[in-house]
View 1: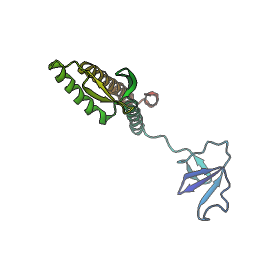
View 2: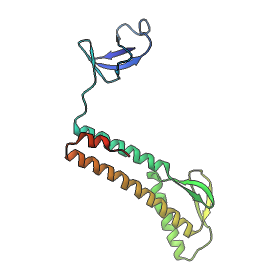
View 3: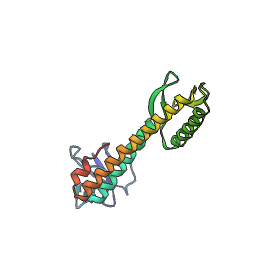
Length: 179
């Protein structure tokens, strides 16, 4: 295995001998492939070394970013459910949340007007227009908004656990927080 050194850091790793394959100004160092050298490691005085662990505040920031990414992925997954008798997914991404609130308000208004026919259009992830009664639309949007709230609650619980661990200066506690 060979590591390309840029400055004092490993910038690239290859299994193929770089001799003659790259510009001669590139600095390559051979290493035993059993060694766990990775991009970002330091190379000084002929030795590879792992980068220092981030300080506890940076670790907490990284962990919060992981939780945010997992939260956003959960929003993107949406809420699987039958819509007008067909399996579909109610999309719950941030851009969908405003639409859900608007549909819920329209459903409430239609319910107050006494409308009971399936006159409300809804399109889920399958992108098929389905017609719902105002009561069905109200229930669908109520469930989807509750799903969104549950995702936020889950995220906030994880971030609170990070804050508790950070306050206690507990690196392992921060690392242990997962989605």
